[in-house]
Structure formats: C-alpha cells, structure tokens
Amino acid sequence: MKVPLQITKQEILTFYKLINPLTHKGIQGHAVIIGGSYGKMGAAVLASGACLKSGCGLVTAFIPKSGYAILQISNPEVMVLTDENENFISGINLKIQPQAIGIGPGLGQEKQTQQAFLEFLNTNKSPLVVDADALNILSLNKAWLSLLPENTILTPHPKELERLIGKWGSETEKFENTIAFSEHYKAIIVMKGAPTFIINQSKIYQNTTGNAALATAGSGDVLTGIITSFLAQGYSPDHAARLGVFIHGLTADIALPETGYQSFIASDIIKNLGKAFLSLDS
Ligand SMILES: NC(=O)C1=CN([C@@H]2O[C@H](COP(=O)(O)OP(=O)(O)OC[C@H]3O[C@@H](n4cnc5c(N)ncnc54)[C@H](O)[C@@H]3O)[C@@H](O)[C@H]2O)[C@@H](O)CC1
Ligand SMILES: Nc1ncnc2c1ncn2[C@@H]1O[C@H](COP(=O)(O)OP(=O)(O)O)[C@@H](O)[C@H]1O
Ligand SMILES: [Mg+2]
Image (spheres, rainbow, N blue to C red):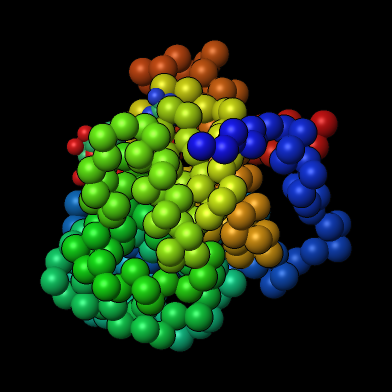
C-alpha cells in the first residue's frame, strides 16, 4: 500500500484560501444541509451551524416540519425549508441549486426517506457530501451508488464503511477494498477514525490533527457541515475533504487543555472553529 500523504499545516497552506476583504455573502457560497428526523434534529442543527461557521455565505437546512422551531431558534442565521412530513424527510424539494449539499445527519432510514433520497439522486446537480443515514440508505440500495456524481465525498465511520463495502479481514484489506470502491465510483472516502484517512482513488491522505475528545455524539455531523461549507466556497472536493478533517481535528486539539477528553462535546468543535482558522492565518 502506498505511503499516505500527511495532512499537515504546511500541506494545508499550499491550498488554503484567505478571505477576500471585498467578498460578500452572495459569493461566499450557499450550502444546503438535508437531514434531521424526530429525536435527531440536533444532527441537522450541528451540521448547519458548523457549515455557516466554516465560512460559507448562506446556509439552508432542509428538515422535517417538526424541526422548524428547533432549527430557527438554535441557528437563527440558518434559513430553513421544511418537508411536508412532520417527523422524517419524505420528499426533497429545494427550489434552489446551491453550490454544495450535505445529506445524511440524523436523516433516519424510513422507506419514504429512502424513496426521497432516490428521487434526489436522480435530479441533484450540486457537489455532494454523503454521511450517516444517507450512507446507510446507500448500503441498503447499492445500485444507487452509481447515481452519485463524480467526486462525491462520503464520510463513513468504520461501521458505516463496513455496511458500504463489506467486512474486511485486516487493515490492509480494508484499505484495498476502500481504494477499489473509490476508483469504481470515482468517490472520495473520508475513513473517519483515529486517525482519519482520506481515499481519493489512488491518493491516500492521513490526517494529523484530532484526539479522543472527538469520540462524542454529533462530531461526525459537525464534520459534514464543515466539509460541505468548503465545497460551497469553491474548494475542490479533494481539498474540501482534506481541509475539513484537518480543521475539525484541530478544534479538538485546541480545546483539549480547557475541556479535557470527557467534557468535550460536538458543539465545542463549532465553538473552536474560529481559533482553528486563525491558527492558519498566523
Ligand atoms: N444529536 C443527534 O441528533 C445525533 C444524531 N446522530 C445520527 O444518528 C444516526 C445514527 O448514527 P450512529 O453513528 O450513531 O449509528 P450507526 O448505527 O450508524 O453506528 C453506530 C455503530 O457504529 C459503531 N461505530 C461507530 N464508530 C465506530 C468506530 N470509530 N469504530 C468502530 N465502530 C464504530 C458503534 O459501535 C455502533 O455499533 C445518524 O444519522 C447520525 O447522524 C448521531 O450523530 C449522534 C447524535
Ligand atoms: N479516538 C478518536 N480520535 C480521533 N478522532 C476520533 C476518535 N473517535 C472519533 N473520532 C472522530 O469523531 C468523528 C466521529 O464521527 P461519527 O461517528 O460519524 O459521529 P456522529 O455520527 O455521532 O456525529 C469522526 O470524525 C472521527 O474521526
Ligand atoms: Mg456519523
């Protein structure tokens, strides 16, 4: 197996873009986060909040109706579109074509949600990040994988990866099978873990930031928001994935002396995004 390229600050600085003083929210990118279901609306709150705080200009959350007040109160800066259904996504009608879409956090796996996701895959033209239950729905309907646009970013944790590509007998086999999957579907796989690796066909990257504080509910939902934001800002999918995992992990490294491992929660990733970005500017 090829030696992974280390995702370090020096590496990131070769493509990280400073914000143009003359920018405005209309050109900073519009991202859409599609997710949430009854009892897991927090995943959409976390992903959409992280998305906005990673620099894009506008964020819209597409969620079930029961999440409307939750989202608007939690993230007043995030705009909301709601599904006709109260409790889960049953039909995705965006009426806009955003620069990037992140789908999956808290989505659930209802039959109607699966059908809605299929219709979305058949019509979507925006660059895509697929996470959580959207990955699980693809695992249940593997024929739909061929509907993913080229360079879609998938962000499975190990269990989601196993559902997607099947069990592996060794780390080497896991990488070989993930590389084969990436090459077959021309998809970028963020293999979340300790550490996180990114497989982009023949390219393998290893993240150098992050720690066990991230082993907490919602930290993957936040990562989806961060990567979707960078896609919306015009980063290539390869760069968006690399910058996303680097910044995501960096927030945990920055926060650790204050929070310790136990009391770090996914919201702390969002709280420390500013310090993480500023550490790149210095
Ligand atoms: N506050 C919220 O609304 C939250 C919503 N969530 C949503 O809940 C849904 C289910 O996601 P989950 O990941 O919780 O459930 P899954 O059933 O997809 O995965 C949980 C299983 O994966 C295994 N697993 C997870 N990380 C692993 C690792 N690093 N190594 C080995 N095994 C690992 C666990 O042991 C467990 O068996 C998703 O849609 C997700 O977005 C979760 O993100 C948690 C927080
Ligand atoms: N021990 C660890 N060290 C470093 N990163 C970790 C560790 N445990 C989990 N993470 C990171 O936390 C995130 C967990 O993602 P995920 O399981 O999807 O969370 P959730 O679905 O609850 O939001 C991933 O980015 C993963 O790399
Ligand atoms: Mg997850």
